[in-house]
Length: 412
Image 1: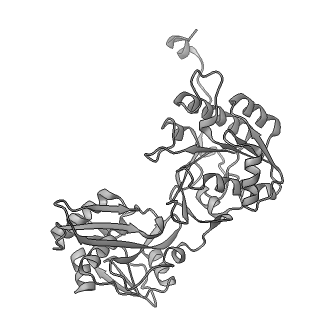
Image 2: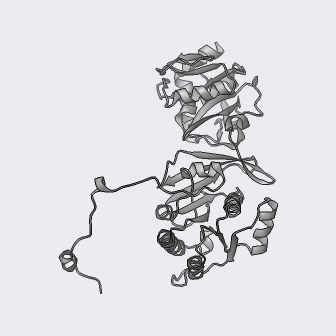
Image 3: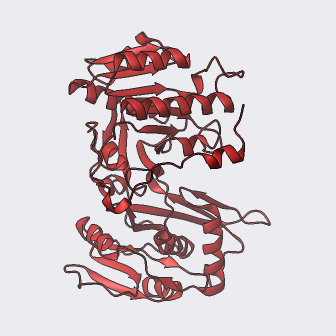
């Protein structure tokens, strides 16, 4: 019988602590053996953490997690791989295809929640991998596996197991057409870390992003190259993303992104052609469509570009997705270059945010962007007028205050 409010008030309160007297050291980490994976987690897997890994079907979630299991297993750590979708033979075939050893790796083909938890308590592994959370069913919940109630119940139970046993658990989650993890949205609030593996299945590159991390930053990304032998870490993303770029092509602009602690370069491509219909088409791949509409309006109103009868297509080469405002200037110049059919100077890279008034606004970590641009062999940078802590050497800086001024300086 539930206690009344009066009874609850009569009880003594909980024990409080003075935060100033609490010693909080750096969280212990388990190195997975994949540096890019550890980078996104903040330095490694924290014991007792519950990690959710999501991504589109076929994007490489299972491949990534099998490589993590193989690296940890080969280093002497016991790993328990739980699957409700595949048999032990199927998983072993994939391990062999990836060239991984199965030493210290244990497999459990099970979907019953209580059986899985009992096995974890008995085996006490260094890491548990569950593929996938949508296949687990709790006998005490009257609904089918994958339903809102089942997914929430299973996640709560796994959270208790992880915290009490100091055992990290990685849950693989399916993704809906809207790009969210299937099941209740509250699933992301129940776990400690939420990771998404992104990319175009028709491109080789995969990007691991952190959407939530209680033990580190969510701004870091890990870049991988999908090959026949699995996911290969990319130490220098700029070199990979610019490998097939044609410098003298109209509509091609190089810009600098900052993701977490590092900067890298990507190519923005634009194609502008006369529309055959009454309403011009706008398309964007790897770039926010609403942001593209806004930038086109700025180019028409503030820069005098006539795009009312032109179809505009913008693409981020390599299947990469960009979101920071520092890409605005590159998108505008790519559209202007394609419209005028004039290529950008081959040794020029640009970055900067574009405001509604056509003004160029400074972006953060300009020095880091310039250093990466210089490292990749570019000799010129076009950016908003801003104060730099020191004048860069061996690279020429061009500053502009408006997108109109930037277009005039480059294309005349």
